[in-house]
Length: 366
Image (cartoon, rainbow, N blue to C red; front, side, top):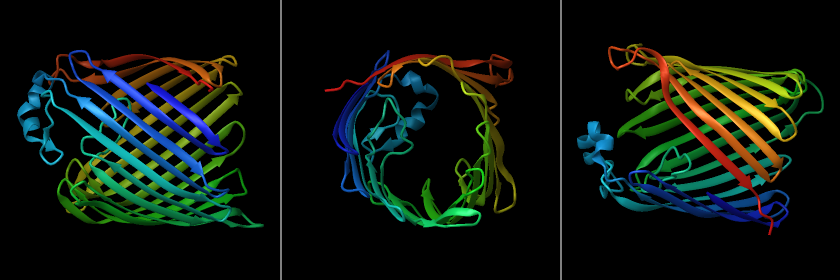
C-alpha cells in the first residue's frame, strides 16, 4: 500500500493511493485512485475522489465446491460475470463528490457516490457496489444564552439510491434535533426516519424508525451514553418486515492518565409484523483497554463476544510511535467459536481463526 499527499494551502490537499494484494494459489486485487479537498472560503469546501480497481479471480472451483452450481448461476454486471471462482478478471471504478458548508449557524452537505458492479476494494471494506447514491443534509444551529440547553440544531436529511440499470433501491427522509447541554458536557438527540426500499427484488414501503441518544462526560474519570430505537425495519435474512428494537450503551473509565477502559453493550431484536414470531434476538458486548506505556509505546486489547454467532474475539495491538509521522504496528486477531460435535468434528470452545499483521507508516515531506 502506498499513499502520496500534497498540501495545497490552508485546509486543502490532493493525493493519490495505490494498493495491491496477491493470493497464494492465484487471484489478485489492485486499487488505485486520486482525491482532493479544496477549501473555497471559511465556510465552503469541495471533496472529490475517483478510484479504479482490477480484480483477477483464482481459477479454483474447489474453493466454493459446496456452492459451485449456485454461484455459477449467480451473475453480476448484467450477466457478464459469475460469482464462482472461475478465473474471471474485470475492472471497476468508484467516484465520490461532496459540497459542504460548515457555518456558525447554517451547515449543509450534498454528497454523491457511485460504485460500478465490478468495483472491488481488496485492502479495504465497501458494504455495497453496483450503486449510485445522492444525499443531502442541512441543519441550523441555535445558540441559547441561558438555561439547560446551550445549543440546539434541527436538521433534515433525504437521499436516494439506485443501481447501474436505473432501478430504485432505497429512498428516505428524516428529521432530527440535536442539543448540547450545559451539564456534564452532555448531548441529547432524537431522529425520526421514513423510507422505502427494494431489497432482494421485494418492495418494502412502510419503513420507519424512532431513535434517541444521550451522551455525557461526568468527569475526567467517567463518561457514558445510552441509545435506543424502535421501528419497522427489514429482517433481511427472512425477507420480511419486523418490529425492531435496539438498545445500546457504553461506559468509559479512566482511573489514571495512561490507562482507559471502554465497555459497550448492544442488544437488538425483531418480531414479524404478520404474526409476532421472533425473527432474531441477541447482543454484542465489547471491551477495549488502552495502556500508554511510554511516550512512544502503547498497547491496546479488544475483547468482544457476539451472542448471535456464539463467538469470542481477542485482538491485541502494540504501537511504536517514533514521531507523529512514523508509526509501527504489530498485532493479531483471534476468533474463538463454540463448536457442536453433532454438526462438526469438535466440541466446546476452540480457536476458529487467527491472523498476525505488521504495519509501518511513514510520511515523506517533499
